[in-house]
Length: 424
Image (cartoon, rainbow, N blue to C red):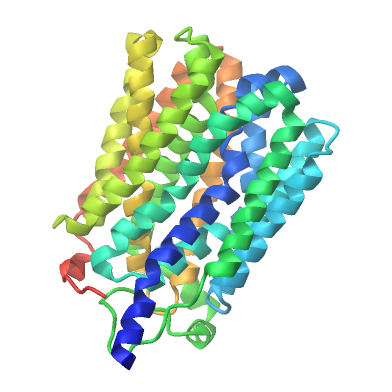
C-alpha cells in the first residue's frame, strides 16, 4: 500500500475516535446526569430539600472550576489517551467507593471527587475530535461527540430511577462506577493521536505541540479570555449552561408538582428531553457547518428559543401536562443542543497551540454557572414555593446575555472560511 493510501486509511480512523470519545463522555457523565431523574426518590430516601438536591449536582461540578484549567494545560502537553482515560478511571473508583456511603454528606464528598475525575474528560474529548476532523466536518463531529452528555442522561434517566426503587440509591452509584470504568477502558484501548500530514488539513486551529503552549507566557494565555470571540463564548455559555442545569434539576419536580404528572411519567419526559438534547447537539452543529451566518448565529438562535420556552412555562401552559411536556422537549433541543455549535465555535476561535487551554478555560468559566445554578434555583423554589421565579430568572439571564452578544456575535466569525470543502 502506498504512503498516501496508508495515510488516508489512518484518517478514516477518525470515525472510530469520534465514537470512542462520544461513548466515554456518555459513560463519564452517566451517574451525575441521572441525579435529576432520581430527584423524587433521593428527596424521599435521604430527606432532602430541593436546595440539597441541587447541591448534589453542584458538588460534582465544583472541582472543575480549577480542574478544567489544569486539564487544559495537561492536554496541551500530554496525549489525550492517558489524560482522559485516567480521569474517567477516577470517576469509576470514586463512585464505587461512594456506593458504601452512609448518607448525604458522604455522597457530597464522593461527588466532589467525581468532579475532579471529570475535569479532563470534557475538554480532552473535544480536543481529540477537533484534532481529527477538518473544518468542513468539525461541527457535525463535535455535535455528535457533545451529544454524549445528554445521551448519558437519556440512559441514566431511563435506568437509574428503576434501579433506585428496586435495589436502593447505593446501587445507582455502583452502576455509575461500572459504566464509567467501561468508558475509561474503551478510550485508553482505542484512542490514537492523529497522523501527521505534509499539507495542512484545514484552515482551523492546530496544536503545534507541547512547546507551543510552553513558550506562551501565562499572562498571554490569560489575555486570550479577553478576546471578543471569547467574551461572547463566555457570556452565552454561562447563560445557556444555567438553562441546562435548570432543566436537569427541575423538570421532573415541575411536572410532578405543577402539571400533576406521575413520578414515572415525569422521569420519562426527562428521558425525552435529554433525547431531544442529543438530537439538538448533532443537528444544530451539523447545520452550523453549512450556515453562511457562522456558527455563533446558531448559538444566538438557541438563546432566543430557550427564552421563549422558559417564559411559556411561567404561563398557564406550564400547568398543562401536555403543553408542559412539549415545552420541556423544546428546551431539551435548544437548551441542551446549543453546546454543539458553541464548542465548535470555541475550538475554531483558539489560536494554534492553545486549543486545550481555550477549551479548558471557557469550560471552567461555565462551571461557575454549573456549580451555582442548581442550588440557587432549588433555594429559590424552596423560598417561594413555586417554579415561576426560577424559570423567570433563567429567562431574564438568557435575554440579557442575548442582548449583549447577539449584535456583535454574528459579525465576528473566526470560522468564516470553514465553508471550504476539504475532505480527508
